[in-house]
Length: 400
Image (cartoon, rainbow, N blue to C red; front, side):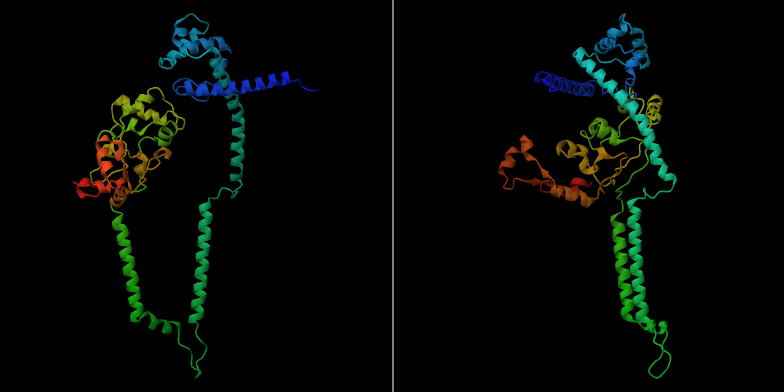
């Protein structure tokens, strides 16, 4: 049976419309709801999983509530009692009135929530089965989870063992005594043949020279590392994740470190800054209420959180964050590394004098962005100017 062109067109149109509807539901949810709600967990507001069952699948009443929650709570609607109870349960946090969304748009959001709820319900048994299947090989002692680093160490140790074996065989052959001399007397012992070599002035001089070079090298490396703490990663009083806050949620560094554009120090965030968000978000995705509870305890007691400082320069060094970040336009990642990818922050750069000098030699100054330097820039023969050429290597710039 051949399908008529009009029927084929109608089916294609309905399929495209359904796909766009689903996409619009997700996009609308991300744009309007995701800052306060998630389907599978509580954020500022309740988890939306099973919201249709809680409202007895009455989408008409749900639409009214979403468009103006306060009017619904204070009105005489079918579920006003439930809405008021929900409002009081969540510390009377006022939900935004979405009067700009049409009924169809809100229903597409509700459709997306329903689809996500079903996906979570079907994914949970599969995840449980996968966990059991993944745990099973470990019981039998399978070697599939051996670290690649271990294999590298095994091969390296094997190569060293083979090299030592070859060296021993060569020495045995070289130092092997002959059974008899030409006159029939016994050959000298191994010690008798080796002693002249190790007691010679050349051999002693060689040993002293190698020892001296090793001592100079070790002393130089140790001296250059004094005061440098690259890789330093102390344990903090709260398991704060920069990967979550700066990476996933895109919170700007300047929001928490308020002094970075104003003065010498970037400052450690106070508990009040944390409470701007955690006054509403009181449960984390990884640690639940455990870590956020420490912030709430600090706020209620008035005792500041004792964060452990990571980046610290010697007292003889002057460094100004505002000069670099505000004036120079230097990104935080230039010195602190990919902070948005760090679960726990560590000292990324060595912050040595040589490291700073190399940066001043390589960093180009944008004179065109400042009208004050416009005429100066036009008169320059070299159009590219580095920090070094502006006095960035003068001792008094960085040292008191």
